[in-house]
Length: 295
Length: 277
Image (cartoon, rainbow over all chains, first blue to last red; front, top):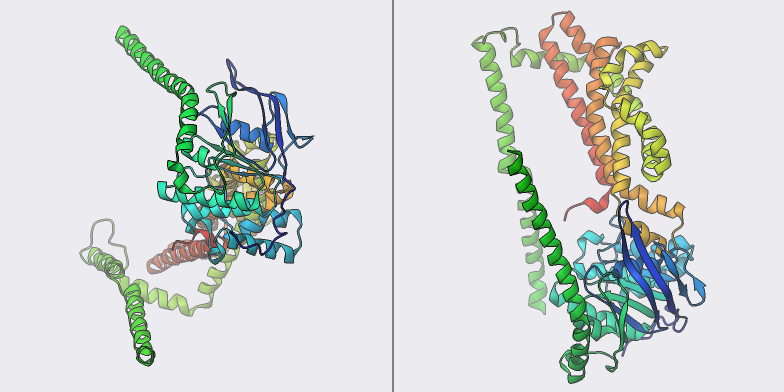
């Protein structure tokens, strides 16, 4: 299906596994504390594409930050293979919601950043970068700055930058958010093809049902506030995934099941939203009344 | 095939012609013409004001007198010497301010503890207008020249520091996170993320600072200086040589403009990613 030139530049097989044991995260402010994640225990399986799903504001991004090592859990432990996470490392790579390409570097400099800071030799760096840039179709654009690229190209550049370090685990936090529908579909197709070709343990966060099912080997559904695992669903659609599968009966079946699970959580989130709105209205009315009393 | 090849030069010719036209339009466009007209109208108005002797402005020289003064000045050595003195004062004070101010701002932007220790004093001194430092500067420094350097330094220093602090704190945390995930050590994050990330603010601080240093320099030269464009303008006043006052003012304006242009040009060179396409 794909050319296998440059085999060995991206390793096959040395993939990691993420294990979470009772991970809890509480943000404490002066007068109140908020439990964002509650006793999360699950695995991101070796060489599989796991999708984390849940309504907005269910702590998905916090979970990513914990696994990436940017923040520490309040309690519980996270393991990469057998070693606990103590900080950020180049074995795990994160692709962020908003583009995190360095605006002052060209695409090429962005992509080789990981090699440079790790002290990889010049020749090897160049080989890897060129191979990966060709793979993501940005070789012609290597001397452009990120602001000169379209949204879809920026995401591909970011994928390339992540892949050059040959990470054991790739973590993607709603990477296709903000792209228009067409570009988004193409990116999904591109990404799933890439995954099928190079493997690697992937953790992908989204709140889009179709995106989740289309990409995933396994979908983990999260509850709304505090976030914890509600269900794990194995997706048995055959690989390679193609777009016509979005209309297949099996896809619909799974979709039905996921919607069922998500509906409850989403409506909780919605209710919380409207409650917040209601509280705000109440406060406004109360203040108005107070003012009238003053007069 | 042959026909196509035969046409090729024609196409090139057309492209060249179009390009020429575009270049021509770039240089002689309507907006440039308006700008030129605005200057012409200003000079005409000036001439008129002097001619009809508007009250309080009757001492103003004619544009022609100023032009004569300017040509005289351009031929004299002392005039260009004045330029040299003022420019060297500006660059000495300005560059020292950058050398001390940029690292200080970076340190304050990066380390909370360092900022807590230094920022309150900094914020206490910052609102003091640089000109208010003139008496102390004259008292402190052994020579007049050094006190002028110091005043120019003050004019640029606080502005660059405050801009660098802002620049560092405006760098999005996801860039730092991305860098550390890619294997960057603190040293790499400093040189490859924090420094280039705060560069736009550094350039802004330099541009604003350059404007302020000229204000400070001219005041300092008028009060304390020996030589320089500010002093020359003041001496023209004491000698009642009014056309030369105006020549001095225009020279100061041109010098300030040239310095700002230089900083802007440096900024464009240093930040190729900011170019618009």
